[in-house]
Length: 71
Length: 194
Image (cartoon, rainbow over all chains, first blue to last red; front, side, top):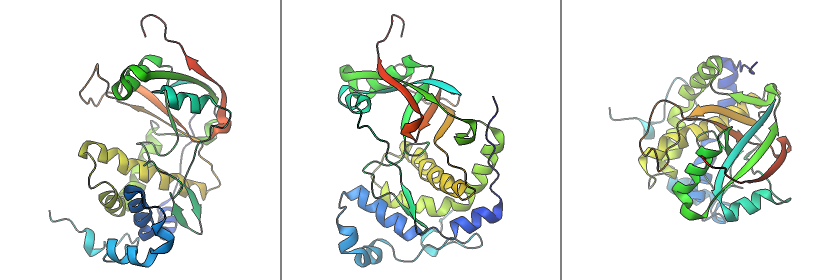
């Protein structure tokens, strides 16, 4: 059977990922985990500060210090 | 192409799926923000959607029994899916492209999962990483004006009969992301041997 073949180029991947707000992703998934769904709109700034010590930019050349692995 | 696939669940969820009000909730991309806020569930290994096994009611039943014991049931679903809306992750070209994407986003996704799943069972964590990554991958594909409405892949599913993980697939999973693909749905009544 014929399959759709995905051809995302490296540039297209980078362009897309550079526009993904991983801080928001984490905050929202954290909220799902704790079921405190109403807190997002009320205390967004607080959550960002307490749950995320640093921002997580997408950058293929570097990684945030908070997620460096020890090994 | 037409698919007949089977969703193993409990009787309460089956009633919801069979109802006319049934919907499949997906995350949305608004202002370049990935927004899973409408979901109470985390994505499965192939992302969000209705998980079914192609041509395998027996595996759907065994999967359901593992979680629902005697309250199991199986829903048979017939779909019509065009090849240009199906992400086939058994296609080696797509596997290579997906892994390139995954390698780019791996560290960020691991951090998301770390926050989200710090209390989760470690064996489930890997599939969660893929689930989140596939959601992002599908959104990236959408930038090419391609809407992925289903994801298909050969997988291994643990059941009470086979309570150990194998690298050899025992079924083909079809994750249905768009309710409009569904042509018919009905409760499946197992026959002898299922």
